[in-house]
Image: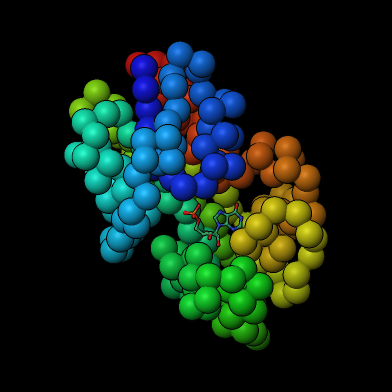
Length: 190
Ligand code: IMP
């Protein structure tokens, strides 16, 4: 059974290939020759993942899934949220972190969570699967692993930032790992 992953990120595609049952053949956007930008103009992770998955489902008629992730900071009313990748306007992680720490200057409530939503079109039915991890934003960067906001995010019940953990430690507890676990469970049950 073929399943398109509506992503241009080959690392993510390979990660998914490694964990899904081998009878599911994952095709990337490159594999199907789709190189257009899909405008993600929704207001939620659910809407944006659906826009991507639905566009490809309508175009190909095949099984498709897409994911969308954001960092939601309580004291900033959920910002950067769906705007996480371009929070500072440049698409650069160091700029995003600088802006985040500036917005949180002098604010005691540092609670935040990462959430990943996967929208799946499977046999013409739509399904949503998600994963979330709660934690806090510290006031300085720590660690060099990972990407995005990892150097300032400390998960609840841990002392280290995501960027101080090695990849396998992060992958045991991360929002994305939990969403993918739910996707694997879906295929085990369907
Ligand atoms: P995407 O939907 O996976 O492209 O994620 C959107 C943005 O959220 C990324 O550009 C990062 O800024 C941030 N982000 C997503 N996942 C993580 C993570 O695991 N650690 C840190 N930042 C992340």
